[in-house]
Length: 136
Image (cartoon, rainbow, N blue to C red; front, side, top):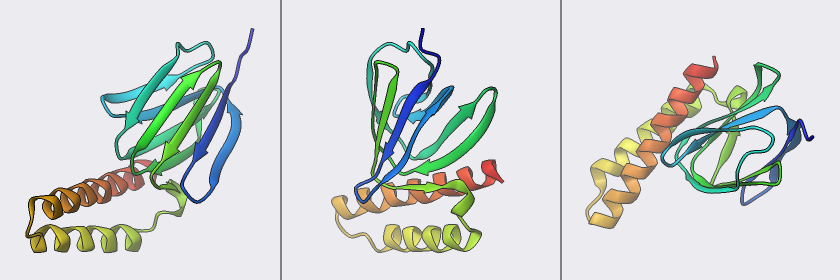
């Protein structure tokens, strides 16, 4: 019996994590879901939020992801993230700057598409702020 999950966290620019772990909690598009060994196959969209990696009953890694997709199967969890930043590397200045920029884009948006993109950026910035506070 397999007692670990092989986790791969990939961004467009690099492979951020590749490790075996006891459990992964992923911010799915319809809510958080946990992946344990033997999990049923699953494809899911991801929303901005924090991915938590567990060793035993403790969180060993927290990574903010801006969205993307996850595939679960064969004791593997592959997360394809639009953007990923370890929570420990997120500074208050980074969050403040990102929130300010997102709010300015929302205010300046003229078309429906610009408004939609700006609001998505604001959701990401707000989720980053929440993830930083939860990981602090």
